[in-house]
Length: 362
Image (cartoon, rainbow, N blue to C red; front, side, top):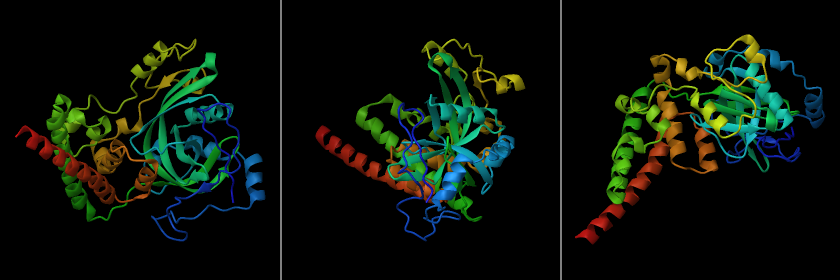
């Protein structure tokens, strides 16, 4: 069994924890299939081999990783090798991931990520007895060195999922071989998916109106009551139009960091294209344009419903087990139905509250 010593890069003083092992979803019975490549099994390897891989472990994979284009990570079932950041909370596609990195091993990791062509790394859930083998692919959008604190502030967007196949090494940080993972609805499913998301959206509108009538909140009378990411990937073009601009690197974030005193002596200038010298400089604060912002309308629409389903899951404030379950689903329609089920329960509750309120008024 490969033991993967991991700790949060945002928490000081945590050392290696030898009890943590790479594991698949604990709710999946052994030898049963969840999706194409996930089969509810531990990734096994002799411990001697694991120790050898960790120490000799060779960083030969970094050349291939650094040369991989970001487009590869948008392909389904692409074989990739990536560094992985373990976190204590589940992240899902469409999330923004912000980290303050100060452990030397993770500073090394993010310098590697910054210098790569794709700027993509993995994030996986760190649990008490293991590391989830399904995580999110994150694309670096901000890299801000803070010399006075010997740390790096990074921000990234979760653009997809990965399914771990094997561990490359576990020291000084975890790196894995993985397959990218996207939904694989049947060719006949687009109509079903469209109907499901339209029905789900209608239920959300009902919930919004019920909340507005119960609370008298003006905010609940318009589409801004929905989260930014839900609106960004909405089935309604007019709602998507309420999101100011396209996905961007939000250069204002760097100025906010500077005002908050997080920048030390660094005077960042957000740029959308940088020289090779700046790209390799560990002292340069950079804001990148995410690959999603460069997609054509057709490319964005191809995965819009999938993105919406994850944005909905996040907005429902589900616990980590439920979110991890959503990550394991590989059907957009099924994930939308699961979200709709939760929303419908809220609608029933709100209708009952509304009826009681009306009785009181009468």
